[in-house]
Amino acid sequence: MYHFSKVIEATFEQAIAQVTTALKAEGFGVLTEIDAQAAFKKKLDVDFRRYTILGACHPLIAYRMLQIDDKAGVLYPCNVVVQAHDDGRVEVSAIDPLAMFLMVHNPEAKAIALEASEKMQAVMDRLAAVPITAPV
Image (cartoon, rainbow, N blue to C red):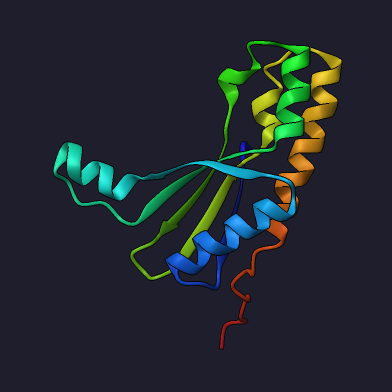
């Protein structure tokens, strides 16, 4: 799988805040924020659900990876998506850095990618998932 995903118990705005806080707690910063809904409306004049792409970067991991391969920057940033579904659910999805960085063919890169993957999974683990309820 190339991503981690989770439906969380939050409004769209709360989800953005939760994700940003979780990223920060794991050493990531948000470099970019793309409002796909607004972009599609402006550029294509089409309606789209709320969908925000946060471009996250962990400076130390990025630096270490670029020391191994100076072209690895084409894989940055690590994107995290917050999207609202028609049924009111809010879902957060994040790239699995392991899947992304395995394209860098170097044993050291794999170790860094594993570390980055663990950090992104920790970000997702910090988010409050919607509780699973048993059918009645």
